Image (cartoon, rainbow, N blue to C red; front, side, top):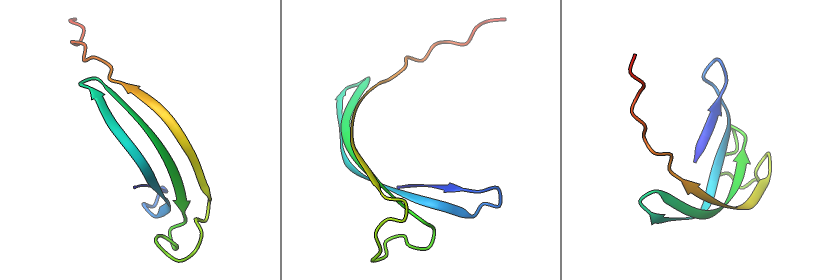
Length: 72
């Protein structure tokens, strides 16, 4: 789950993620997900998500290696 806030730190929406994530090596992950976005008042209510559902998405993640900082 994640959420967005406005400049007054009020919640704008909640996003609920559902899916699977697999660590395929020390530097890669693969997964498939869907997301549902709710307004600040209807999280976990009986209502349908206010902003709908999206997905599924498939993705592969490759870690960017840590590079030492440049010397000045």
